[in-house]
Amino acid sequence: MVEDTGDIGGEKEAVLSAPLSLDDEQDTNNNKYRAPNLVKRILSLFTNIRPGSDLTRLQLPPLFNIPKSQLQCYGELVYSNNNHLLSKCGASSISALERFVCVVAWSISAVRPLAFGVTPYNPILGETHHVSTANLNVLLEQVSHHPPVSALHATDQMQNIETIWCHYVIPTFHGTCIEGKVLGSKVLKLLNHSETYVMNSPNLVMRLFPVQGVECLGNVMIRCEETGLEANLMYKGSAVFGRRSSTHRAIQGRIYKSSSTKTLYEIAGHWDKTVTAKDPMSGKLRIIYNAKEAIGGLKTPVVRNPKGLWASESAVVWGEVNKGILSKSWDKAREAKCLIEEKERELVKLRASSAKPWRPKHFNLSYSNETGSWDCSPIQRWVPPAPIAVPP
Image 1: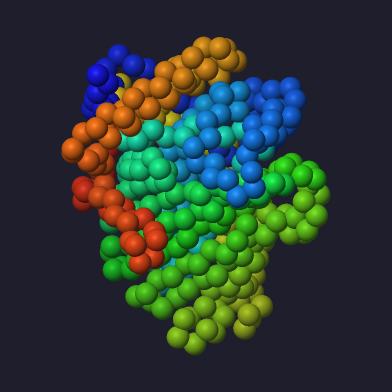
Image 2: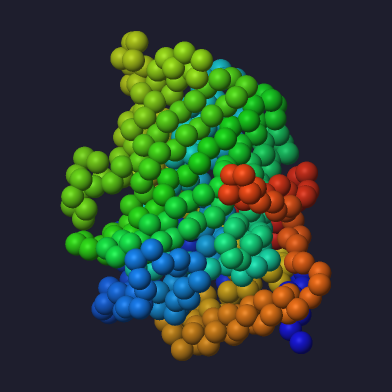
């Protein structure tokens, strides 16, 4: 009989890789994740897939993976940031409007470059990722497998900041592209100011024809009920996909008062370069986000306390697969990945035969029949310091 993963990592090694950063597209080391005729290999996976198919159950060989779980990628959006933009959101020396501008910049920093043809692993049920950076402690858990729902809780007790995400992507094959609808909400609480910000994420579109590439598209709404401030940001793609144009990775939007709809700032720029805010009354323009400074050259987390690692930690669960990919030992990576997937299938059967339903350890998970959406709430008030940390 197969048992669920225990709490402590034991003798298993955690293998961590560099965060996705602005440098990835220019980093020649990224070629280790690509293979000859990769596009043909990817297209061969879809030979028997019809347009409109659900891809959440598709299993890829390691040749198509980057050495990290999707759970880790979500966590990096919060703890991998050179400018500590989250802490700036809670500053007491600025006005409510300036705090809102900081929240907009922090929201933009959660968009990272994605390479075509490679993808992170699908997290297993109950997988966790626990990392600290400065005073911010971040904990994630895969709280559902079908559909794949990830929960994130990050807290900074010193600045009284809390963020809670319930994140899930529904990918659909449309023949010439794969659209990933990013669902779930992001909630940021600045407790010292009694302010709560609610926002969503742009969708992901991977084009297969005529030119391959990945784009972040769609509208992002950011709201603060206490101050009545709102932002509407539109993420745009290339006018002709595959050719760089003025709209490539562009952002356009505005910050306004919901009560009057009066525009306070006009937002424009590119999320991989700089984004500016313009005062429509004075015409004054200023940079509110610099991607190179915020998400360029990000540092790889390190294990500070090996004995504190849980067996459910992403870097432990996928450690042997990570080793195989990083060393280009594809047979070893494939074998290690198959073992994980086979154990997960056996656990699914075990849970199905048990009268006791599986429950997350760190979050409460709920589903609304009325809205058709999932919601996650953390069990603990504060996230404890993690055995994995981002170097200062």
